Length: 535
Image 1 (cartoon, one colour):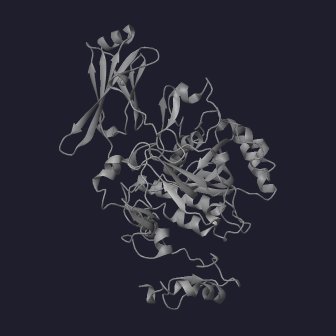
Image 2 (spheres, rainbow, N blue to C red):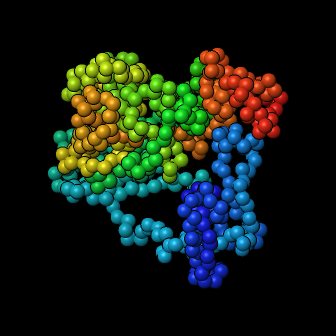
Image 3 (spheres, rainbow, N blue to C red):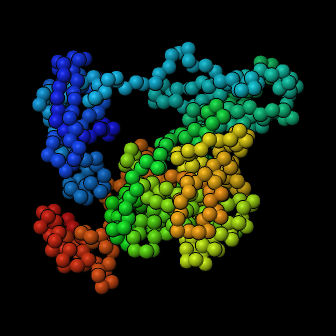
């Protein structure tokens, strides 16, 4: 499956000879696109070895990706192909194999490295040199553990180590440790993948002047128990780097028009949010007594709060919420405030993103924030409060650095708190600073035009790009069937026009309608897939 596809419409012209490097395509693009009558062209890169496997009998298909929404819309099940068009690979009328994509003079380059580029890491002060070694389980063919050897180069720490100085091991993140000499400096031991702290052990070579930290690699099922593991932000040459969250240019993304949505938001958004839960998580939501670890329940509650935020903002009936506060059961006071500006379409990642600003409340600005929130309530814009546990609050604070870094248009300052502490987030404790101060006050002007008190808070806020959190299909089984959304099949209303409950199809007893008119308008097509009693 190749999802990175370029799509266009137009008239095709070829140059050169087929099956040679000189063969090229030129497309005279039809500017009216979908509204015109020109053929559609799709182009994508494919490894050559795939094309050479079965050149005579292989097929090329243009298909809709399997998802609960696609299966519900087009019928069938997970096993059924949702192909729109299929051709044999050797079909010269419909399939063209070239070295480059249309209208490109160069081929895509891949970043690589030579063995000489792989060097041990020496810290900027020249106090230590770090070597990382992987231990491979040959039977399973996987890396089972990492060893980070920190060779001490400075004379003073060497002397402390020879004299028997104690070593303190501190976990900074699932990827990083600090090894501190008593009455001496600290040395950083980083790993290329998350490791289990419960398996970490330190070896000390006092005469040879090095420290070794050995730890087992965290398996997928271990990740829910790891701190800052959902969206890690790591350091590379004193700069924060996103580990698994794509960057976004929020200003260039299409804004989603919510004016015609139902009271619960667009039906496609509801379906998208429903896929945030795996089958196991949905079962936990429906049957809370089911056994689950505190970390699993915390991540589920985090997702539920995200769903609440997206769906409430998506309402078009005047009840949409633009300001959220989050606080904790055991800790008094608001700990963060979100100002939701717009919902945008993340085209590359096929999802929706909230363009928002966040104000993580700490002791220095607590009074100003409290006064501004009271002023918002007085003018008819009271924030919607979300109350949660300490474990879930930690997940929100750990997600903030990634949400800010992914859409950052400002530079980190030399005085950046991240650099000074080498910890991201700075803290998850109540009343302490979560984010560095470099991005405060950089939210674009006119971000919240209808909220006058916003101007008093903008100097504390940072722009964030919030996206739904989906389960990994490598770890958990995704939903194969959407939960019942309880909305009209035609217009997506959640109530009849007179305010009563929705009507149910008398044949399948599953599909909902708000009126006889909607059911009549849908019946011509729906009767083709409608099955008695939902079977």
